[in-house]
Length: 269
Ligand SMILES: Cc1ncc(COP(=O)(O)O)c(C=O)c1O
Image (tube, rainbow, N blue to C red; front, side, top):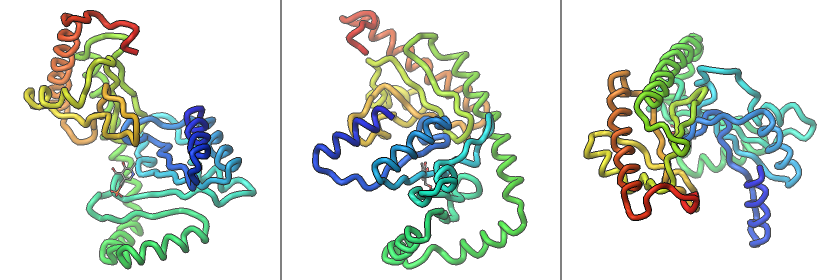
């Protein structure tokens, strides 16, 4: 919230007009982090105070495999007198099939009206055939079963990946990872001198790949992080992948520590 307040104040100072705040509250892509109830309430209070809309992107919300579901900011807004400032975005991509290319929006009628016009200007209409078969499928109620199975599957894979990280990664105060309660991803933070953009070719040489953390910043990227996906690979692939990745990271740390600057110093932070 402190960072949001700072950025908002800077934007206003620079003469910009802030229209809305975009957030991913449940199992964010890329970190897998889920917002606390306090943070959700604080953001909503901030939006009311500054007369801003909130766009809450929630593609992973149903994929919770641990812990308790918290109210979305959309739900919190709906419980107030002032309701109507949150737009909630949903998709079938993560709970059914990405190829359906169908999602939905929850918002007040005025905003939905504007979105319909914007959508018509863009592509006239979402694929009608996809909408028809989806509607038929949803009537069967089978999606609830599928979401349950997906959560069971991802929970197992997430737990296994975390276990393999604990087994293979160097044990250091400056190397850590998130332990998501849902979604598809976790986020690794590495010692500050490791540049994961530059490390990609070394990882590929070991036939292991990751998504560079810097790709997820709008501005001022940090370069010592990466996103890993646990939903797709088999247990065998996860173990082998993490083992290879740990080897590449260990080599980076060893090269730094034997280099001219030697051990990590306070300047690295
Ligand atoms: C945060 C976030 N929003 C939206 C999407 C897009 O979903 P869709 O497949 O419906 O375009 C993704 C997909 O990865 C995502 O991570």
